[in-house]
Length: 195
Image: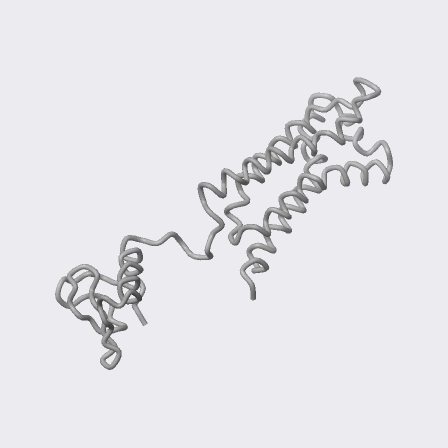
């Protein structure tokens, strides 16, 4: 199975879609305590067509997140853009008074449009900090040293002893058998046992 369609990414996309669809209505709930029930019902006053219209416009923002999710391998890279974009949407929808002016409903179209640049910029910052994600944790110093030893082996400067399945310890340089958990000379532990 590809890492782009792995189960955690599918779950993350499902969460993004679910939150994105429900967010305009959930953001109105706190305002009902101040403005009354009409504050929430104003988003439903257009009937099913109005609900679909709000959902269609809002699909710009959560659809952008879903499309960006195909560029990364791990869901953690979507957390910052989702928080920034959905936070902006929640703030904007919670304060939009549709009864204030005849043109205030136009904001329903522009709120998601304004959220898209916020999502994209935050996604780019997330990529700069976290990278695309390789599906594994960042390497420890032992892993980095083991990778540098593997590079040395690849260059051919330190030959592998293929017959005895041995390699050089990256801490002391002594020959160590494959599959051991630590060097017998310097007691250097190996996190990932070379195979």
